[in-house]
Length: 218
Image 1 (cartoon, rainbow, N blue to C red):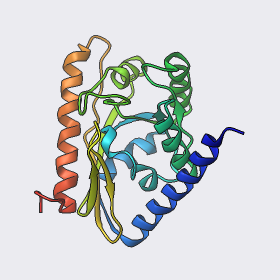
Image 2 (image 1 turned 30 degrees about the vertical axis):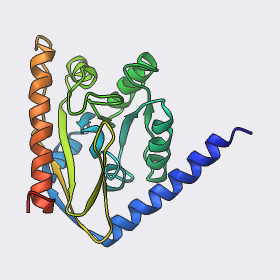
Image 3 (image 1 turned 180 degrees about the vertical axis):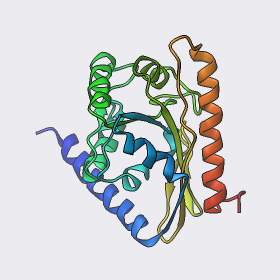
Image 4 (image 1 turned 90 degrees about the vertical axis):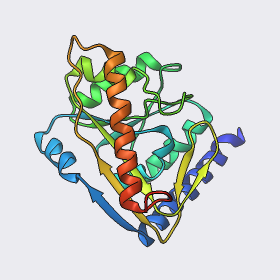
């Protein structure tokens, strides 16, 4: 038996339990949550965008929601997918480099069904905080909006990998911020819209850090 799946299952379980502990012991502040609620009332699918380094706690914050995050088929992706499933979230597996065509079909099915699809547009390999075209292409083809989101944590670990991965600590003050929806028209230049989305993601990240009181934003 291949030991990797057993290891991934164990790490996914432990990771999800840790996130539950963080959530249970922390004060969660919601900023512009009405943006999400109004889109949900409409009954149509939409897209979330978030930086790769700020994804781990989103599974707890959106537990049980009709969100289908796009998760790569890498080993790290297996771990993230496992954590998502512990929160009742079924990811779409694939990326621009692996499984892209099948992932695109599943994205289209999910959006048609009214689900929310989550993208980390600087993943799975970077460069950090630079938007790749996948989420913009999906928004352009479906006519559905992209909601930029970010969480910030007053107490956190930042791992010095390529994505500066943020993990919140327990007994914390955590902010979840929703930004103004961005739409991509059929004739829009995707490079320009990528720059717009980068600015929006940086803005919600700064606001999340400010509201949570993260270092340098207290």
